[in-house]
Image (spheres, helix red, strand yellow):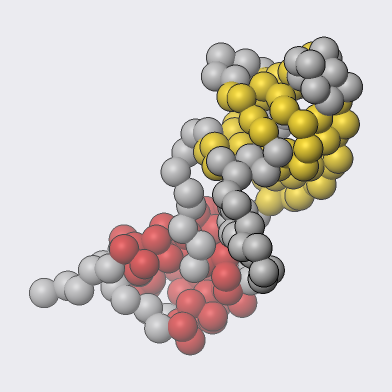
Length: 185
C-alpha cells in the first residue's frame, strides 16, 4: 500500500512543474539526480514520500532553492487579509503571504492623494500583485472585484487582468510587491 501525504503530493507537483518549466524529461532529471525514472515518476505523482536528501538532489539538478520544492501554492484568486492588532509590549510578526520561487519580484511604494483613481495596466500572464496599506484607505484590486482596504490590510490578486486603485476622502500610502514569472520567454 502506498503512503500518501499532502506534503509529499505538493512536493511532487512542484518537481513536475519545475522540470517541465525547464523542458526537461523525467529520464534526464533521473539521470542528473541518480534516481530511477520509476522513483521520480512516483514522486511526481504524489505516491512517494521523498527524503530531504532526495529533494535536495532534485533541487540541485533543477538549479533552484530546495525551499521551492517545499512550497505549497496558495489558493488561486484574490487573498484579502484584514489588519490585526499588534501586541502592546512586544514585537509582532505575521507571515502575510509566501511567494513561491520562479518569480521576479519588484517592490514599489505607491502614494495616492485623496480623490484619486489609477487604472492598473495588466501585467504579464501569471503576475500577482500584493498590496500592504501603510496608511489611509483605498478601494483596490481586480476591476470587477474591488476591495475596501484600511491601514494594515493586505490584498493579493491577479495582476494580469484589469485592476484599479481608488482613494476617496483620505490619501493612501501603499507598499506594492509585483511577482512576475521569472521566465517570460
